[in-house]
Length: 381
Ligand code: GLA
Image (tube, rainbow, N blue to C red; front, side, top):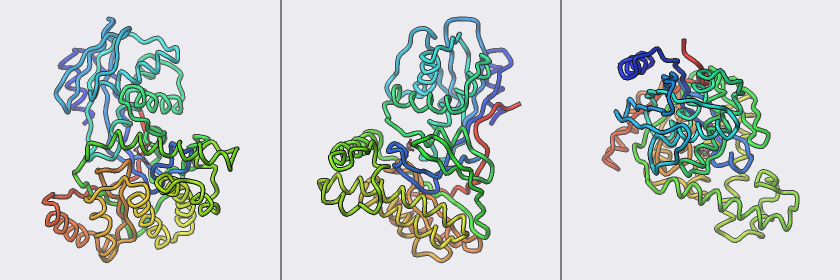
């Protein structure tokens, strides 16, 4: 991928680029908790986005997407979001750098990726790769955490998705063979060594992406914020659902209207599940860990209502198969992938059974994506 991007850059712009890479991410558990200052448990994967960049001594930024085979040009001193366009992630990060006071000049850029499915956060990978590339190109001193925050803000302002911090954070801070137990209140993490022994993690790409995803995402976030407002009468110190103790869940059920309660309950119980899951991994108890994955899925599907028939089918079907420790929908929902922890000895049978069942039910050929926990964003030499 790196060579291809670099060659395209040289062909189009006739100069030697700097190359930055940022990976996509998986999430073991902790879904829709990040924007309520909860806990999440993501990791970077091997696949990601490569960006080739160089200054052009002019006022314009000339962009080329290798995957869309499409160019886009904007003026460094005057630009605005363009609905639904990939260039938003780039302009969004540029805009954040400028707002923070960094002086940027025109540049040329080519990017492309090998992220094989939706739900692995290619948008965060792109934004973090851009932040990493700009930092190197202009020799700025910017911490990884600032790049993460710029990437998140860029997505809010230029793509209109009020996402949490998990995706860019995992893309920036990923470490080989480790997951990040990330506290989205303090924006700090512990690295947790992950060794599933005789089991492997595999994603199943549902190959659906329901187009209400972005607006539904923002609505879920608003529902959580509405719950917090109501709960503040009883919990005056609470600023997010993170502040509501799991032991009070029944009491919360008496305070909130039914539809809000279901959403709040997901977040409060999911934060608890992240704690339990990290303890289970620490103790090497895969059975407990697997059961938490299943509970997480049920809660995302029934209470938080961000699943869809395809993801429900993939999760529920997998639970009936031999060798499956646990599985669940992963990421924002409404399509994308499920994450599955499966015994290596049963992996082939598992894939055959899932492929056949999914094809029969939805006439879709599922893809199976093995994942390895990997290093975060970096400059490639
Ligand atoms: C998307 C968002 C993240 C997070 C997940 C759900 O991936 O970008 O911030 O909220 O959904 O856990």
